[in-house]
Amino acid sequence: METRTIRTPGAEIVYDVADAEAGEGGHPPLVMIGQPMDASGFRALASHLPDRVVVTYDPRGLGRSTRSDGEVTNTPTTQAEDVHAVIEALGAGPVDLFASSGGAVTALALVAAHPEDVRTLVAHEPPLPGVLPDAEAAERGLDAVHAAYDAHGFGAGMAAFIMMTSWRGEFTDDYFALPAPDPAMFGMPAADDGSRDDPLLSQRSVAITGYRPDIEALKAAPTRIVVAVGEESEGIFTGRTSAAVASLLGTEPVVFPSHHGGFAAEDSGYPGKPREFAARLREVLDAS
Image 1 (cartoon, rainbow, N blue to C red):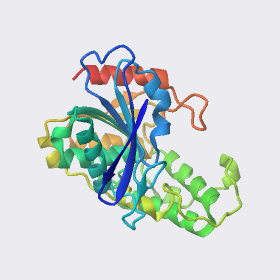
Image 2 (image 1 turned 120 degrees about the vertical axis):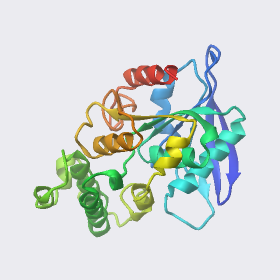
Image 3 (image 1 turned 90 degrees about the vertical axis):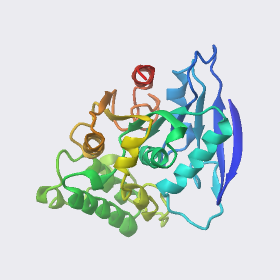
């Protein structure tokens, strides 16, 4: 694996390039992006794709990538320009792109702005409440997560986040009548360490969930866009947003193994099925 660095406006972006072990086999590079996850979260998945050049990166302000723009918000359109710069630096586009969670939101912004960059985009569970029929209620639910974090810290915020993202179906009065969850129920610390800079739970993430994809630009792009959803996510928040985005694009979501982090290592804190996930990803990419 080779680690490289490029400068973009307001940031220094670090990315890794892992060469194929037995030749590229005619495949374009496979770029993997997440948010708020850095490159390390894709190691297990990449290890099961040895026949492809795999490129991973740390979004600005996360992991090894720094920012000098004076901002802390994780803005999809800004991050899309960073990914565009990485793809340009590779000199091997158009690439295939696997993007998960907030990274899938960035990827949608990238394809809208630079459709020539990506051959196939697999957008895995983009968390976009604005596309839901109960968008106002879903956004209220996210506001409650931020409020719990602001008031009580990481444990309370994460417990509220898990409760929200595990809720099945639309966010009804029954959901909002639930008591605040006990962090201990989810193995979270009850003590507040005073920090309020978590990239997932703080206001730094609102530009991601508040993003509105340019559906017409995405439909007009030459990029093949596949919206992916975990088999365990049906009916819950990111499963529903995935189905809604696919519907807006005139497609059906493609089911992948496991959950929202289904590509994560089996021994991680959120164990997935990376081998099975890689096999499914290969099927989808090879169908291009």
